[in-house]
Length: 354
Image (cartoon, rainbow, N blue to C red):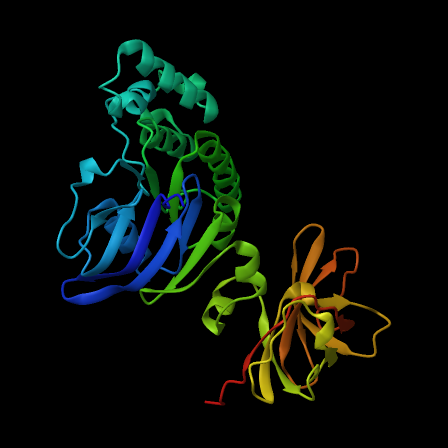
């Protein structure tokens, strides 16, 4: 069996005597792209720095291509790890042209091979017409492309990207994430992205690890994180959704304020073993239906082009979210017919009232 390009086994990191990363384990296959996703201060950047060798591990191990590079007893020098890193602030050399920035790590190659590699990456990253420009003349997106090209130039075993698109607007961020994914896949480079933006993570990564309080809550693909979150914390962080009360009646029936759900029609549904439960409803689970006897009052609406995202208040005062085609334009305060149409549903034990 081929060893994964990157493997972490029960890695913990302390900084200043404080536990920042707590027993994290995951693996990324060669050519795979992973993402560490979480809010600011959750430990994801510290974990990335431990993979690079900038921080020591206090327990566990980091392995690259089957060889341990970090344990509490030994740490392989950063320059020997063949790890490339892209930082938030790009860190381009201002006195060097784009061409020379990209070529910076290629000094061991002869001039022809160095030029060929620079030109190859410039073509892949669509910056061929910028090679003679200097960093201060570039936009943020262009600077990021140059920084990524420079990190990729020596063909690292693993490329680490620390919030690389955070300075860009949301639309450009997701577009660039998709483009960089294509380049990394073309090059066969294993990569780890750190991000707080789930849509950026969805656009770029094969698998995503949700980090909170230094712990890895779930390592999975985007589809499973959204539809089958392992915990309330993951459900709360990934996607949009609300929890509604339910009551398990028999083996395959759940009663809710929005009607009775036959759980036999739902993929991979598991009751949590309690009668009173909380059900996670996504906006795409709550359908607009003028003929439905179940009505909810529109309290907020957000236009998203093809759809409206409605916030709806039920008779109990509970609020749910619903995506509806934008030609169904309901006013604030107006009742709107809705029905459940659930293909994936996650249930948790009902939280106690605080």
